[in-house]
Length: 92
Length: 193
Image 1: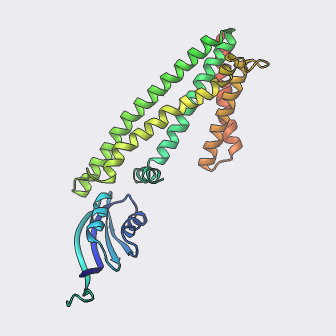
Image 2: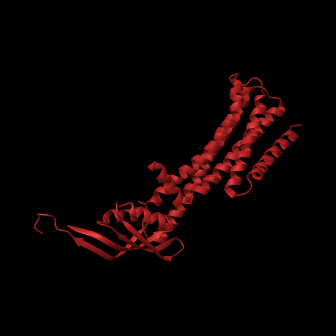
Image 3: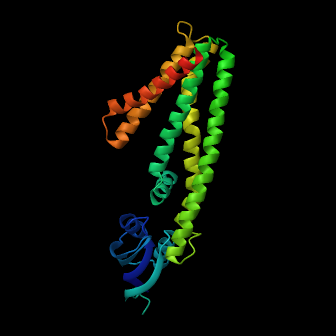
């Protein structure tokens, strides 16, 4: 079983919701998500942000859905950290 | 609770809280002053038929409500659609399935509801003494004078609310709106002589 532990995402988002609310919405997608958001560039109506998400088992689809429902665009996945775990007794 | 949070979120991303507050005060003041003016006119003219007074004031309140609902909805819907189009251009993306698109649809209804029902609420409160008199529950007081006092109190409270929003001294803010109401009454009385 493959579990995603860390993601670094490059995102373009509108000014609203603000960085705090946006990070909260992402963190709410998991029980143990740790979110670090950095605003890298601010334009008239948008801002580019780098989002670092850490968790035991990050559900990327839910994160991507939250990003798009808040009007933001995922530009690229810049870093990924995944782990494989073998099931006890499965012989993997 | 979740619906309330969602509504608050949509108001926040469209910066609509201050717009709603402004519409509440502006149209609430409009409603209160209109009904105050009508009741002052009835008082000065010596009209004593409570049914006529209630019908005329209630008609004005309904007209203010419909006017508030429709005008605010049309202007806010156009503004929010414009904001959404500009945001879509800036994002170079289709935002039709996002909270921003939901806000563009829902927020104009909320703004219109506040804009429409604020004058209606204030009008109903001002008309309460007249309804009480009609039901023979207010016998020792002139219902028109009671309604005028209620209107002046509500207008004073609107001023106090504005004072609290702006951080100004609440009493001065309340007195200022009260002065406007009293001046309106004086003008009506002068014109009726």
